[in-house]
Length: 631
Image (cartoon, rainbow, N blue to C red; front, side, top):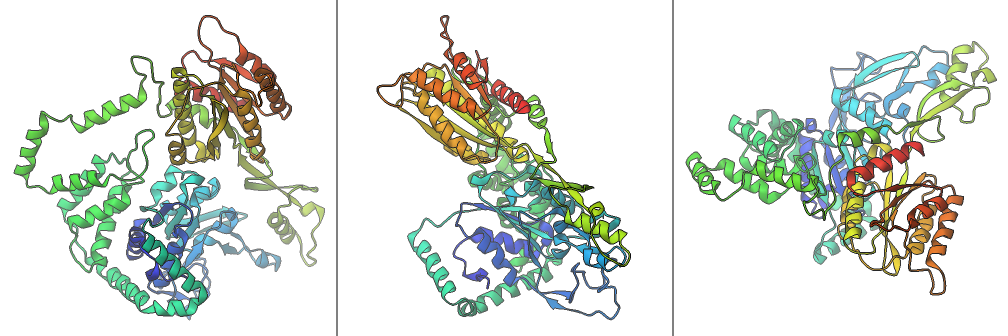
């Protein structure tokens, strides 16, 4: 039983975005982002119960539209087949689904019966004319992301494998939910979502209590609770039916189209898909309200849903949309020409042009100050991305995408489908699998790493520069962490102890939040940091680690009062080396007289030691990426 859509407390933007996609599926779907336990999945799944029925033939695996059957659908191509009203498909794509399950494959049952090669449709066929839902979409494996991108771009699914050559319609509304703490979404897939909403738990105690009250009542009597909300559910369904019928008659005049492009330009949106989505969403808003004419308010509301995940963001800037800025742009665009010119002339001498302001702000992020007090904090340069992108793909790994299967009489990972296909194609009367039929799965995976920074935050100005450079490096590396599946963690040590500032994560936004405050100063508890590093790396499981230590090595705080901090540091370094943990030491010691402690520590770790006279984000990223290529 599905929790009633109309019974969900608040979540107005989320429910609106979902209903807009129901009115016009070509909008492109909805991405719902938010913390755990904020009803993301509940709201998405609840949509299915209010969607208007569609016409389809019972038993059709391709969900063919009436009078437009797929050439591969034997049921719908039967002239006696009759379509009946049916629920809109709501298909869940599991994170662990194989590519065969998603796109379709050879029907083994038919092959084993000796029939000709028959295509078995996958999830993309099942989702045609309906909804494809992905929970934790940011954790979706790369090879499935590629499949979705292809289908979303073309509106069809093409399969060419095992002697099959099949193309069938695959037009669906994509709904995804995600928690930012678990990592970001690949940019190409992010742009495919027409609309995006951020959700959070209610801060008002009355609303929170009402959420709990409704949930408990639903769990106590699901059927009875749903019946109590049936009238509201029917009203929403009727509203959608009316809006769908009205949509083709809704008019958006040319002046409002120019307003849409103006907003996209002002928010520095590079994707033209934003303009198209706002256009479609504004018409859907008007249809949902029962109007035939789009208003400026429709444009504003549509922009609020279509722009947050597409606008250009500066380094370390949080996602979202500046609603005050949006309102200001709307007001300026709708002013009579004479008033707008007068206001522009009045402000010309007092304000810096927006383009110059943006340029100046970007230069602040991209350059080092004249006094040399701040390191270079910048977005990864082209050369950095080139180094990051050169990480090798692991071939024939125990985990990862199944690339293909090869004959192998003693397979360590049996390719069942390929083995049975080989048997079916060879056997005549007696179906019996022999050693000659056995096939081995060949997989391809990413070399994902856990990069653990240990940052010496003792001292003052030099420590602050180290911390800022590490912050820049963390965010730059995380920008590319989606494709590599890397995780980043940061341990800072100062005063009397070490602290895990950033637990392992793939999320740029979560990292920025956790690293916003960077405390420095005090003594150097190096043994504490190395001990905490050992504990953290034990929990990394099968993810290969890389330890990056930024310090001058001058330990002066031990684990207890009677121990030698330096000797303790060397012992912990030896323990890390014994566990074959790759490491890189960045010597931050400055001045004419240098003790070389960091180099001694690197020898104990079995690591390279690099002296960074001018610590910056750029050379830190390049050094780390170069080290990753050799691990």
